[in-house]
Picture 1 (cartoon, rainbow, N blue to C red):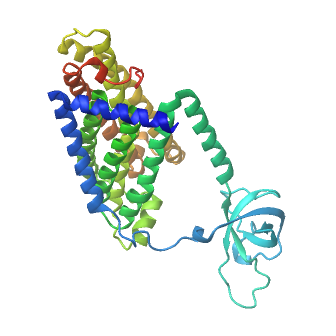
Picture 2 (picture 1 turned 135 degrees about the vertical axis):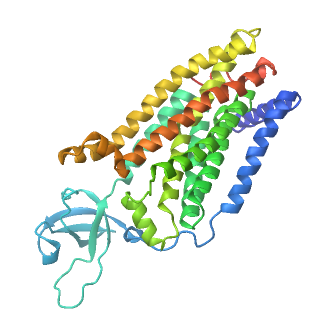
Picture 3 (picture 1 turned 180 degrees about the horizontal axis):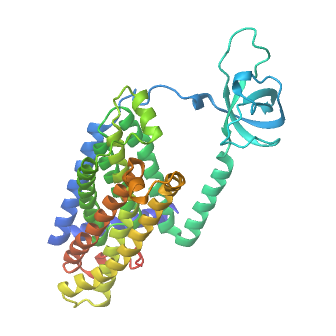
Amino acid sequence: MIARLRRALDARAEALRALWAIPAGRLALTAVGVIAAATALGLFVLWPGDGAVAGSSPGADARGAEVVAVGTDGCRPELGPGCRTLRIELDGRASTATFAGDALTPLPEPGARIRVVPAVPVGAGEGATPPWVFLDYDRRAPLLLLSLLFAVVIVVLARRRGLLALIGLGASLALLATFVVPAILDGRPPIAVALVGALAILLVTLALAHGASSMTLAAIIGSACTLVLTALLATLAVDAVQLTGLVSEQAFVLRVASDGEIEPQGLLLAGMVIGALGVLDDVTVSQASVVAALRRAAPSMPARTLYAEALRVGRDHLAATVNTLALAYAGAALPILLVFSTVGTSLGDAVNREIVAQEVTALLVGSIGLACAVPLTTAVAVALARRVPTELLGDAHAGHAH
C-alpha cells in the first residue's frame, strides 16, 4: 500500500513537471498557485484565536445511559403531567433521570440508549429529585455503523479514487470544524470565512480525488471564480431582498449568546457559499472531464466545436443539477409552506415571508452560480485541452456527466 501510494505521488509530481514545461500548463499552474496562496493568506488572517469557542451548553456534560424502567415518582409539579422518572444504568450504577414530557420527543422505553445531563439543584425540601435530566436519545452507535457502511460501499465501488474522496471528505469536515465554525464564533466576518474555507476545501478535495492534470486545474480555476461570483451575488441578493437572517431560531440564539458579535445576515451569506460548494465541484469536474473525453476521442476537433459539444453536455447536467437543488430547497421549505397553508396564507404571501424567501434566494443564487460555472469551466478546459498532450488531460474515468 505504501509503495503504491509512493508511486501515485511520484506520478503526480511528474505530471506537474510536464505541465509546467508547457506555456498553457504553466499559466494554469500559476493561476492555481495564486488561488492557493490567497487561500493560505486568508486562513492565516482569519484563523480563530484560542478563545474562539467560548461558553458552554447543557450538552457539554452529557453522559450515555440505558433506560431500565419508567415511573412517575420524583417528578416536580411544574414539569407538567407528561413528566416521567427514568430509572437508568449509568457507568454500571443505578440512577434516575427526569423526562420532562416533551411533546416532540417520544417517551423512552426500557432498553433505550439515551443521553443525560446533570440536573440543576432546585433547593432544599423539594423531595427526591433525580440527579440527571434526559437530553436526547443516544444515536451515535447507529450513525457510526451507517458511516462505516457508507465508507465500505464507496471504497468497494470506487476503489482508490473512492478512498481518496473519503480522505478529502474527512479533510473538508476537519476544515469546517477547526476553521469555519470557530472563526465565525470568534467574530470573524462570516462571508469571508465561508469563502476562504470553501476555497480551501475545494483545493484539497479536487487535488486528492482527481490528481494532477490540466482538467483538474481547469476545474479548480472554474470553481474558484464561481465561488467568488456566488459570494458577490449572494451579498447583493440578501440586501435587495432585505433578508435579516433572524428567522432561524439558531441564528437568533447565536446572536444573543455572542452579545451581537455574530451577524445573522453574515451567517445566511456564509450558508449560501458553503451550500453552493456542495454541487459546484461536481459540475466543474464533469465539464472538465467531458472536454478531456472529447479531446481524446477527436484530437483534431477545432476549439470552437469542442467548446460547443462540451457545453451541450453541460446544459443537460446543469438542468438536472438545478432540478436537484430546487427539490432539495422545496423539501426544506415544505413544512413551513404547509403551516402557512393551514392558516389560509396564499402562496405569494407565504413566499414573501422571510423564512421562505431566504430559501428561495439561496436556490436562485446557487443556481445562477452553477449556470455561470458551466461555460466558464468549459472555456478554461478547452483552452488547456487544445494546448497540452492528451496524456496530461487526466484519467479518462475521473468525472461523469448526466
